[in-house]
Amino acid sequence: MTVTLTSPITGSAQTGFTSPTYTHVADTAPDVNAKQVAVTALGGTQTGATVHSLSSPFQLAFWKPKVPKVLGKPHPVTGLIANVPLNVHKCVTRKGVTVASGQPYRNCLITTVIEVPAGADTYDSANVKAALSAHLGSLAQVSAGLGDTVLSGVL
Image (cartoon, rainbow, N blue to C red; front, side, top):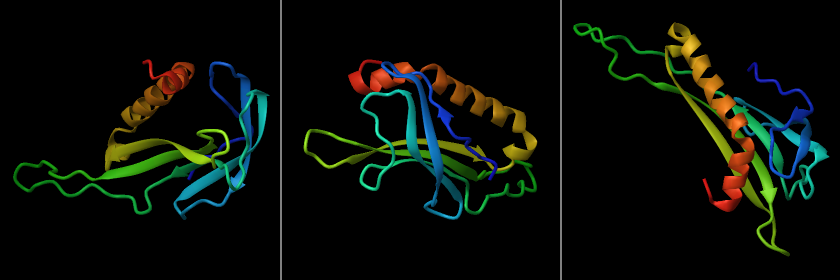
């Protein structure tokens, strides 16, 4: 896999955070087709935020398809490919959070799923990259607003 996070990660804007950074170390991935890191130190101002621990994880994992799917053969008469399989990639962030005083940590999960039709990686890589660029750029652009929305329920 070519996903390689450098440490520290520069966090995107969030209300109440100033210049957030996340120092991480390689962690044991949950499967052979994944890479995972654990956040071991925080930088900037992030009052109340915590680093990774056994009872309160702070991990980021990246997954690729275990067995990449390939494009099937076209119909001999129509030339159309009826069933196009998807290669599924994921990024999962797992962070322990408290729900009330004296309560054990619960995991907050943030998952981005990327489903690329088999063959598009070869025949239309520019548009696959454009989709990823726009998707990730939009998340970075609305980071603080999304954080506020998740907390307030106001979109």
